[in-house]
Image (cartoon, rainbow, N blue to C red; front, side, top):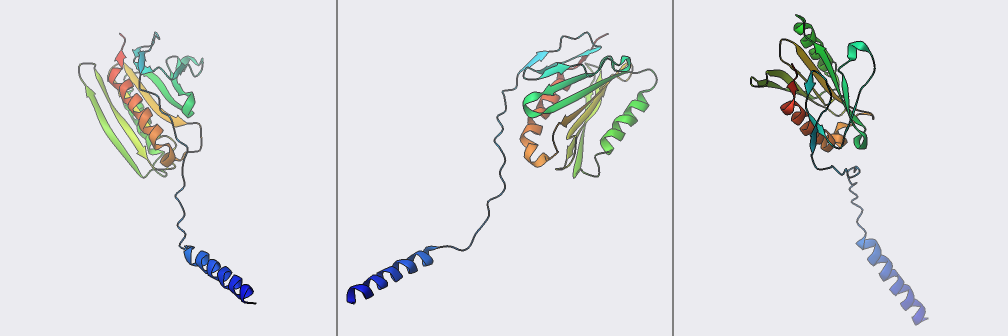
Length: 195
């Protein structure tokens, strides 16, 4: 009988130890995202016969979007590993620069309902005859987190926009957006007009 009481007492002691050691203050972990491996920034010169040329990343693909004669000098810079594309459109300026500037502003302003902030930066490079604006559109639901336009104010107008081929969640895409933004800034810093 003593052995039986001693076994119950030991079992009760062990059970009490386990109950006392449990912590019921549960704190959920924040939602995690997959690790994104980013390549080393490296560039090469575009070898097109377009009225403009620039350096673009070696880990991207340059593709013509269509054979429409009005889009003769348009280009897409595709990032297959990120499901992202920088769409470049080119327009010849012929006393219609104001129209192109208004169009660029309209396309950026369409993101206002989803944007938390739109930061713009002016581009002025007199040596290369290059003027324009960049727009960094912040907000988890903004479809295009980066847009820009550059012009020489007389003959050429290039507009660019970054889009992802996935549902926008710019919080999780932030490392990729920052990475591609550096590539776009390099593109702008190396863009030249052909005469």
